[in-house]
Image 1 (cartoon, rainbow, N blue to C red):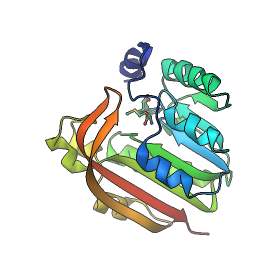
Image 2: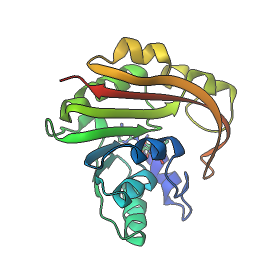
Image 3: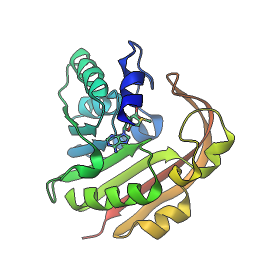
Length: 199
Ligand SMILES: C[S@@+](CC[C@H](N)C(=O)[O-])C[C@H]1O[C@@H](n2cnc3c(N)ncnc32)[C@H](O)[C@@H]1O
């Protein structure tokens, strides 16, 4: 799987563009910067934006080409990010360390996804924020990107049933027009989860 991502990210152009995801941007602008973990961060567009706002950024992704592009983008923007090349499901995060974990379009089979989130959120400080944006199950009707397998896609009930230990701030879906490189282009069904870790 990571070879697919390396092949995509090897190209000169940024597959998902260089601009932060709009939904994440809106979230970050209302949060106080601290330590943020960005799992599945790809070519670094979100990491660089967060770093420019003053967040201390750790990104994890199993794509070496993603890291190369992300570090180049960080340099161009005169910011520093810590980018770890690793399968995020094997990442042993330091406990009570991050103020925020934000996943942007990180898709995998939902049972693996929620197991990974459960492990990662051990590293969230009490009251820390978990923010997830990705494709809703109804994205199967659109051709704007994302996995073609319904078992990899988000829904309100999957978050409600599988994610415990959070005060839920947002767990909703909407349709929008994406304009994020060639990877996410056109009408799309998006799901957002935002929660605050319970003490
Ligand atoms: C759709 S891209 C999104 C990239 C980035 N978050 C963005 O919004 O531009 C998904 C990313 O997740 C990474 N990824 C998927 N599964 C992963 C895993 N198990 N461990 C680490 N990275 C993973 C891929 O390498 C890819 O960079």
